[in-house]
Figure (tube, rainbow, N blue to C red):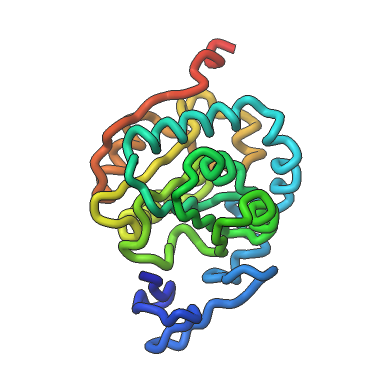
Amino acid sequence: MIVCPSCQSEMRDDASCKFCGFVAESIDGFVAFAPQLAVANNNYVAAFHEKLFQLENNCFWFSERNNLLIWAIKKYFPAIESFLEIGCGTGYVLNGLAQTCHKINYTGADIYTTGLKYAAERVPQAKFIQMDARCIPFRDEYDVIGAFDIIEHVEEDQEILDQMFKAVRSGGGIMITVPQHKWLWSATDDYGCHKRRYTRHELTEKVIKSGFEVIKIVSFISLLLPL
């Protein structure tokens, strides 16, 4: 169900609300539920999308993360039919999933439409929308929701997890990746607009607080840690 980001009532098919009068805008051809944040905000730099689009295909970190996500979907969500990625950026993850898990209906969402342009080029079969992850305009809509290196960019990370719980269907679940170990904080985190790095306990605690049960939590790219 699509719900109004303003009053949380069910919206019409044209993304308008008959109760409070909210109407989603169209920006760069994408339905925009939070248009005031689509151009600039302090959680990320829109110009990064062009750089990422150029780098992702040749960087092992992104490909190995995709391999892990594909493994997790096949193992824990074998019957998945619908998948929403919040903060999908340039669509690298969605493209990787779509090439392997063909029968899933994919939706990508991002706060910036600059990234959605690249994502739509990469994954033309997917649907893309602009939104604020702190106010996801869906209720009981998706089998699985993913947030990959996203919630560390937002002060209100607990709100995002709460919203994911609201938007996922009963019996579904979420997949999240975040940067680990606060003592690894560096200039790269500042440059990337990170608000925090997580401990295993902190992330587990926040996910459970939102109503989820933690099935699997694991570190990845760990062999690089000594370096």
